[in-house]
Image (cartoon, rainbow, N blue to C red; front, top):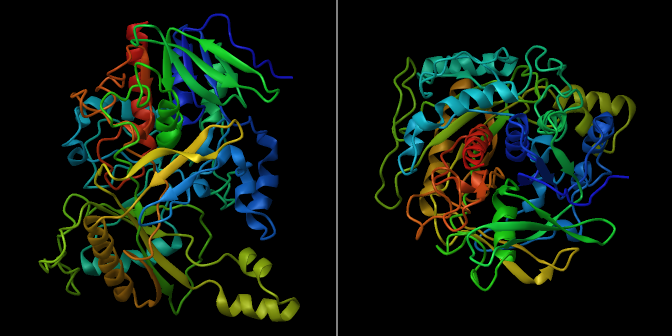
Length: 540
């Protein structure tokens, strides 16, 4: 019997209870402000996670059912060169997409901020705070990472068995491996247990060792914040001057509509739903959408794309014994054209053929979950008894693979708009993703595959598959749709994360990213959310 009526008094209204919304709400509530969080999805019971894990591994279940996604509420459309499968990797609920994320958290490199109106130094203290808040296990062993002054909150996870196989080949080639910062507990931390090895990190961690934002939602509530679930915000209203947001209008399961008023508003609903809400909130003063005098709302949509090469070895790799990545390589991040020098010749430099642009940043990953799991093989096959056992003995345990991410540069043509021909369960136009992959991104994918294949060849792998320029897919890191900048004619928010057009509307999301880089964005989202909260505090 949740009370979903609006609060009579609120200093801050936060839209979205994912990592950005949870961290911002907790910081502001901890400082004594009355905070209301409106979340479109439900509040999931932690004790139900094992059942959700079973849904994930049993072939009879739709993957979207693990976290109750799908249906008119989550409808969308896609256009452009490639179909964008939006629902495959998002969760609407208290905790947001951190309920099923991989959990990799690294700081963007200093070079990534060259086009931003702030630099690495501006975010450096917030990165440290974000690492403590999420609980990051890591080691300062990456020679290509940006500088840091403080140790990680927890020690890094040890390299996996397959990492040790890669290590010898990489040493011969002159390729540097290093640990991966993970937002999962290598020891008990912040009232959460150490990782116990379920191996189903994506899409669900039953133990809670991997960070999820519902943890900070509960912290915010303990400081007095109020969280209203199943309360989709339909639009934002502003005052007569068009300078301040006055209310978030939201619906409830009983069919009622309510207005939550507040002094400050923080949008933290992600890189697709934030621009959608702003476009749905058009008015006489903002006929093209709220906070959109620049015309940039929804534009410059970016994602990371996956590059991978895999196959088998003539020895055991212990595939799927670890459900997350423990080693990676940033050696080709700031200069992807570089080659290496090693005992066996190294990785060749990128050769400029003259008909394609130079590649952008590349992050390489050494996958610990290559190939099918024994459960997947058993449940998806049609064998039983001794026949199944023989197949598992012969066909399982020697798969190996590398993965990696490359980024997209911001392009106006890649964007989120409204599709009035399709409506959601409240009659609103759904988001439409216009998405294509440009030549430079394809060049980056080709270069990543080239390096990956060189390492697997040195390892002696029988390469059987490759994911590259023509058959790649997104990492589901939605960036750029309310970009940050100092010019109000070209951007949506300023460096303090406040919209240019409205004095009390902040955005805490990867939607403010100016460029994408090639690193998982969640730690930067968390750092920006903490920074946005500080600036809201200043205004209050």
